[in-house]
Length: 216
Image 1 (cartoon, rainbow, N blue to C red):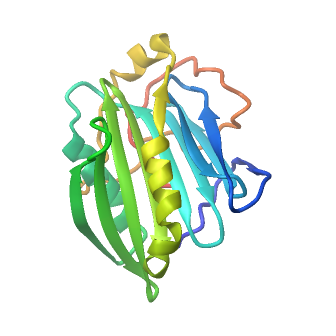
Image 2 (tube, rainbow, N blue to C red):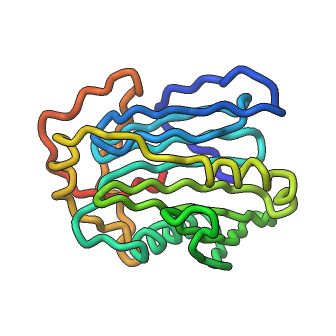
């Protein structure tokens, strides 16, 4: 699995591998805040962009990722699924969408399962999509195919525990004007390349880039 390399604030959430904690993310750039349950001893990384945030939790072999961002009017779920497929394809030689379906337990959650292969290792990616107006939450759990049963409870817990909290309406109204462009045929990142430490939540003075969920 590709190691995420960027300038981020990293810390180890203390605790035992058998317990979980509720992680609460506060909006930094107008994206929806959120809360979800994650293993208490996984590493935490945060990348804040002008258009949203990417939060990752990981151990040596598995990863939970949450993307919270704003999309333009008219963006649909299919565009989000295509963008997710494009991100996986950027890192793995073979990517297959195995299944997509409405969640049986949460009407706001739409699920998709991918298989991704590279360097003689096969991975399974379980992703949940939540759309609320222009606000989008995408939570993914990526594990080696040989460990699916090992991480099943952890992945399901992350997908079903995630819930949106309030963002910043004033900033959301501006970010909603951006154009969603991350499709397989147009996968260049138009997002701000640099990351911002999560302790600095100030909004940018000018917003002139188009929205694109960053690949990294």
